[in-house]
Image (cartoon, rainbow, N blue to C red):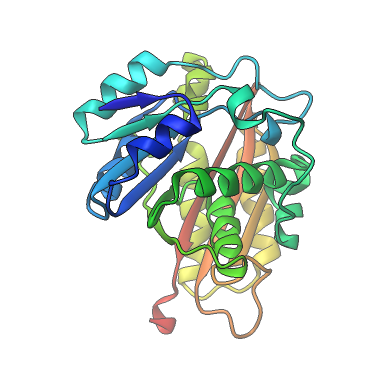
Length: 280
């Protein structure tokens, strides 16, 4: 496996790479990331994983400086799952001059997580567009855990005519249901024991929708109340149309329940997709 830090060296390495499957990450890899790499392996001749903590997507009071940087450990894990190339650029390599040109994501980027992290998805879309232009993949793999991010990337690729197939990987969970995340390492033991409640609460909401309940505001309030009763600070719980991420309308047939909430100083996100039985 090659570990490459410059765009020029990556260009040379990928000159004869065939079909490239790409997994962009910020490192501190866990089993969820590794599953995405395995999925990429099935879609390409050469698998490239980027490891880059992108400053553009962090707000002024967020965890950019303390976000774990674990390149050596990450590379050891990637070697075991068939990665061919790790692209690990510095900030100066990715942004040699102040980034004045940015991608304006679709309006939904200002809702859900975007309402609480202004500019976050602009930073995500910009760095992903840059990485796509650098790596030139045929396929790129993203996880469903960040459902809004996946939707925004798919929209960007479609509307800007990137010749890239976006493949979605299912959320990988611990045995107790907690979605794997690099930020789970911030949780105290007590918080880690409480954290699976987020998934259980979303499952309950999804089950209500699956039974035909259409009082979405009440479903959202009940889920919020459940979390707040156990010490969570809830940013949002929201039922959305999977096809548009808009509030469901009369024609909606497939739904996703999304949430972001804080346990102590750690912000967790999760989602559960649901298709009511009568819509199948």
